[in-house]
Image (cartoon, rainbow over all chains, first blue to last red; front, side, top):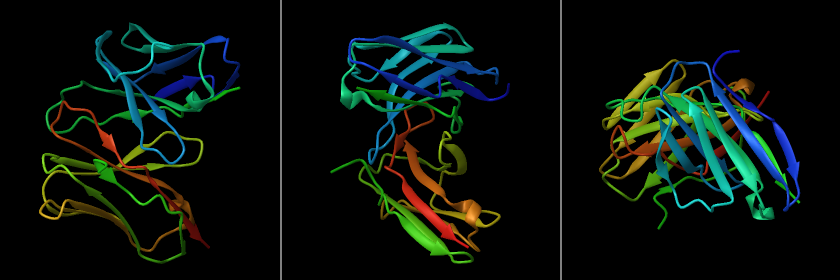
Length: 116
Length: 111
């Protein structure tokens, strides 16, 4: 496997379910990100991790809970979601958060989440 | 006013056309400007990166930044059906600040 992988690719869940999204990067990067992409809205940054430490949490509801056990893996734990949480959830990684003027983020293919 | 404005389209052009995609922004503190391409069922991939005002060319793609007008553009020459995708502009204040994205413009190039 190369690049950034995400599983599952599609997920349908009820509002009372608990599920987790998984992201794995094979690029040797130190920073990982969760984004939410909704129809007709810009990508929204949710969480940023640097060397397994959370460095940014953009006022995300507590029903989303991230976990970064090591620099290669990132999880997003979901519980009691709402229908408006239906979206494409994208994981990304980069060498560092502060890489000088340029620090490219590599994105995974995303998990398409539908909340019924 | 939103930080970054981008017309979502959709934009449909014939093969071989020159495509112009644009974003405007409100905060003059943005310094770094990027264009991402996102194919259906895929994540965004970096296409072009620019820092200063002016043009940057890479093959059929040209990125243009006008900081005085707070306006960036991506031009695609000799467009191909394989260019059909959503194009997202993104910008950041400095190297360690989050990316701020536009909504993306959906482009279809018809053979």
